[in-house]
Length: 401
Image (tube, rainbow, N blue to C red):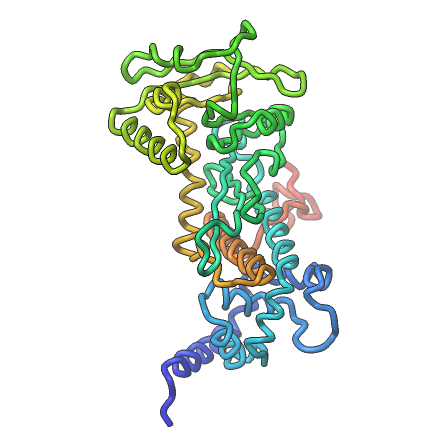
C-alpha cells in the first residue's frame, strides 16, 4: 500500500526536525518559561505524575493544533511521528480543556516580559500611548457573539500590553483595564461612559476618546447643559474647533476639551445611512440631533493646551491601529471563529491564539534589537580595555586616563 500525502509530509518534517535538533541549543527558546516557572502544575494542567509531564512539549503540541490549524487527529499523528508524545486525539482534547488557566498565565508572563523590555515609549514625547478596543469571536454554527476579547496595544510599537477574554455579555468598558500615571488612552465611543473616564483621569492618565451623545451628557463651564450640535454647527468648512466642557461623577467635577471637525460629504452620507439602517433594525426613529451629529467627528480629551485641536484629532486617528491588530488576529491567525463548541476547550483555544500572537510580537521585538554577539549584555561588571594598558589599572579596570 502506498504512502498517503499526509504521511509523506510528516516524514519530511521529521527529517527536517532531526537535522535542526543539534542547532536549537544555541537559539533563544520562548516557550521554556512555561516549564521553568511551574505554571502548568500550579494551574492544575498536571495533576498526576504519569504520562507526558513535559510542559514545553505540551505547549508545542497545543500550538501545533491551534496555531498550525491541524485537527486533533492530525496533531496527535504528527506528535507521534516527531517523537514528541504518543497521545490520542481524545487525550489531546481532554488536555486542551484543562489548559485555559495555564495558557492564560503564560500569556500574562510573556506580557510582563515585553513591558519590561519595552519600558516607556517616547511617542508622543511625554506619554505612553495605549489604544483600547474589543472584538467578538464566534463558535461554529453561531449566529451571534459567543466570546469577546478586550485588547490594549502600545503605540507606536503595536505590542499588546493587556487582554481579557469574556463571554458575549462582557460589555466594553474602561473599568476592565488598569492605568498608570503618564499614559494616554485612545478609545472609541463604545467606551464613552462617565465611570470609565473618571477611572482614567483619577489614575493621573490622559484620555482621548470619541464622544457618545447619549451615554455621555456634558455641561459647560457655567454648569449648564452643553448643546454640542449648536456649537459644532458653526464650524466653517474643514476647520477644527474646541470648547471647554465638564462632567460630574460621584460628586467630583472632571474638566475636558471637546474637539470637533466637519466630515466630508461622502463620510457624512455614509454615517447617516448607517444610523438610519441601525435605527430601522432596532425599530426607532433617529432624532434631529443624532442625524445632525453624523456630519461631525467629536472627541473628548484631557490633553493640555500644548496639543492643538488639530493635533488632538490627528492623534485620535492612531486608534485605528488596534482595529488592524484585530484584523491580523482574525485573518492571519484565523482567530475570528472558534472551532470548538465546549466552553473549556473554546477558552483554551482562544488563549493559545493570543499566545501565538504574543510570541510573534516577541520574535519581531527580538529581531529589532538583535545583537550580533548572540546574547543580551548585562552591565554589571566593567570591561577591561587591555591588560596593563595606559587606560586600565592592574585589575584591568578603566581609570579614565
